Image (cartoon, rainbow, N blue to C red):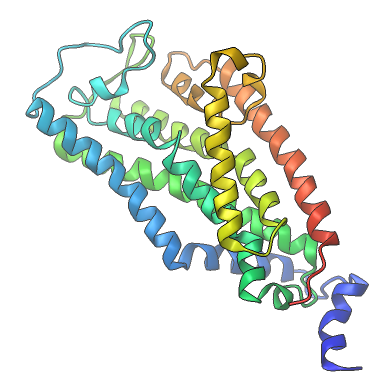
Amino acid sequence: MSQAEALTAPEKTGARPRNPLWTLGILRSEITTTLRRHRTYALLAVLAAVPVLIGIAVRVETGGGAGSGGGPDGGGGPAFLTQVTNNGLFLVFAALAATLPVFLPMAVGVVAGDAIAGEASAGTLRYLLVAPAGRTRLLLAKYASVLTFCLVATFVVAASALVVGALLFPVGEVTTISGTRISFGAGLVRAGLTAAVVAASLVGFAALGLFVSTLTDSGIGAMAATVGLLITVQILDSIPQLSGIHPYLFPHYWMSFADVLREPVHWEELSRNFRLQGLYAAVFGSAAWARFTAKDITA
């Protein structure tokens, strides 16, 4: 048997790894590799800078004084930004609201789009598939690494906003969107839950990006296509004449995370968001698997 045949034999036979911890090792390796890339550091740095810029802008605009409003404005959505001067904890919610429509999903699109296509363009995909890894395990590990990035990126934004908000503005009891007041500790819990909801809101888009990544061997092309799809769908979701399809577009319920700051928490829109993200993950995850397992990898 030649060296090439020896390398590809396990992939062809679909042999399972003898070591039961092998799959866990693949997962740990992919997550570590994703988080240690210089590109990842750059993306996280940009995301962390957004709350800093928002906090400084609000501080300069108001001179550090407390805002005049005692609660969120009615009828115009959650006025997180107007509450930052009253309570620095609101910078967490304002930063997540500012980054979720564009910055966070674009960062996820870059990582997801590069997951498979980047390895193919670098010529390393074939070596990653040397048994006993297998294509299915590798694809799952890649998706898990993208989801890990979603979680890390979201909490980087939240942590940066929390630190900046505490440094530049007073902190204390939190006025919910419903008008009730909760303790600062309870507000911190709501902030953490909000960050988790935002991360979960990117699950479907991450699966879409992974699917796009299996369609090409160009990492840059996959990243551009994923980000292009994001922009296109965002535009479609903003056109009133297309309201009939809005509930089926993955970003439609993204801003439902604001319901976490209600008392009690309103779960209706949040549940719709979670179901929609699960549907996108199932459909495009299956499509990515079907494409990747049949993909001809010769380099």
